[in-house]
Length: 148
Image (cartoon, rainbow, N blue to C red; front, top):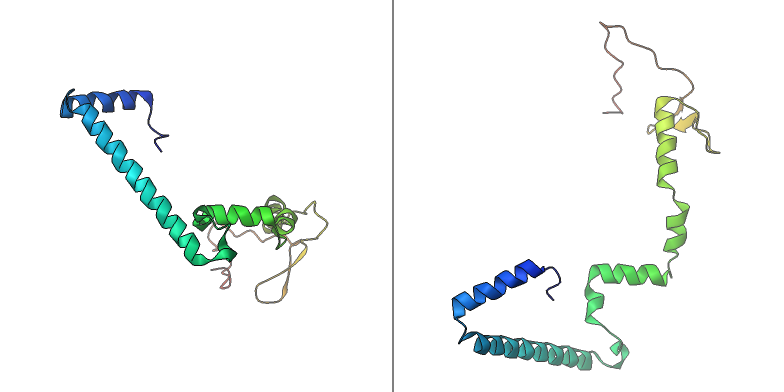
């Protein structure tokens, strides 16, 4: 519950509590706080049990922690009924990005697929082996409406 409180912070809280409540009232305050926390936990557990009873026997193994999206995703990744591991392992982002970078810079790629004739968004083919023409100092580069 208080995993992120360090020892110095804990000592500071104790000293502050002694100063605010005084040494004579502090034990009673601690008992009241622990009693309140205990009642809240009991209320929470009874509410969870009531919900499980209302859901019926088909949800007997239902855990409320499963409602957390991170826990749900983690369980689905472990289950792998959809074949997500195969899809994830079949996709190599670094290789794909290297191919795109090589195609943009006009270099040959080391991969088996040849980027020399990549498809353009307009449906035609682009010759990637052709070097781009250098524009002079006073000339503007060619404008490509599809690229903007």
